[in-house]
Length: 87
Image 1 (cartoon, rainbow, N blue to C red):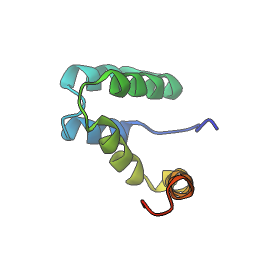
Image 2: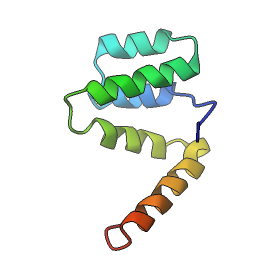
Image 3: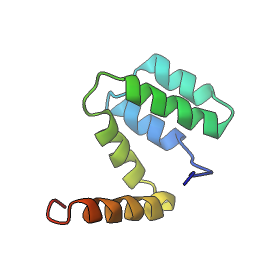
Image 4: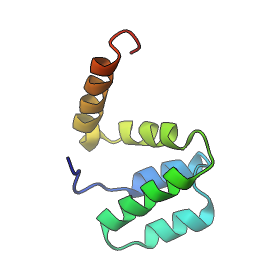
């Protein structure tokens, strides 16, 4: 499934405030005109980051976006199916 129309600016700000992204990376991301390219670059940065909290903080950022609640619900449903006792 491809998620379209993500407004990554709020998540980028959140990740910057929580010191997951540095100033340079946040600036480069904010200058991206294409939202899909912006999201790809953000995921690439997080994937190559040496910060062990990168995806935890991304999850927290996504959970703060009301328009992505359907995605949060879907991921949590999958997690419960994978490990019903761990959730």
